Amino acid sequence: MNNNGELEGNVVWHQSSIKKEDREIQHGHKSIMIWFTGLSGSGKSTIASALQHKLFEKNISVYLLDGDNLRHGINKNLSFSAEDRKENIRRTAEIGKLFVDAGIVVLAALISPFEKERLNARALYKQGDFIEVYIKCSLLECENRDPKGLYKKARKGEIKQFTGIDQPYEEPKNPEIVIDTTKLTVDESVEILLSTIFDKICLEQNTKE
Ligand code: ADP
Image (cartoon, rainbow, N blue to C red; front, top):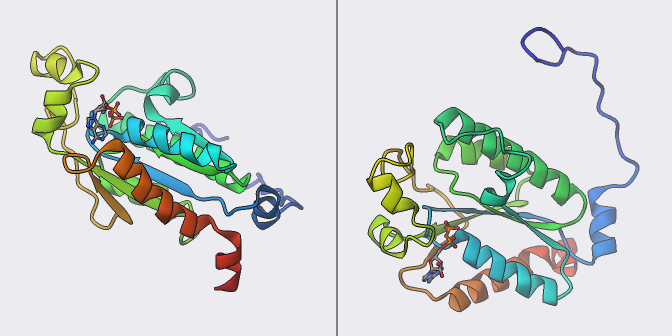
């Protein structure tokens, strides 16, 4: 590493003899990243967690990377500044990429408010391996739900840089799936996601293409 913490040109990628495709066959399905973005309280964790349960019951190797949980460990040194949110997304996307390489269906639920960072996350994955799910919900409804009491604190100025209050949320321009939680129940949302995901992770269908 040089003084800027950057790697110099002497770290060489070690190619694994086991390919992602080999691992997918072992798991019995393709592995992809399903990236949930949306305002706090929009329903990302609730839906991703219910979806994880359904996939698990169907013997899919699945793992949920929940943004709040990651901030208790690998991302505990990060704040909510724009710069640290960027790093939060980069790390989550890189960790998810390792899981996907390991043959696992990954669900990542984090606000990820900036389009540029979401595009950077997507760019780490092969075409078709990154599915962006926009959990759409009005700020008004999120604030009414306020499941963790965070909007109340943000309105009082007790939390700074809160998405939707004093930091922007940039709506995804081209998400693969939009789930409007002001119109759909959790069960309906999960059903929609399940059918889409099954199509994408089915090995037979994908090898025929
Ligand atoms: P996020 O992870 O986006 O911050 P959470 O999932 O933690 O959001 O919280 C969403 C809250 O909204 C939960 O308390 C959930 O029960 C509630 N909720 C109400 N209606 C819906 C819906 N249709 N879809 C998802 N969550 C809903």
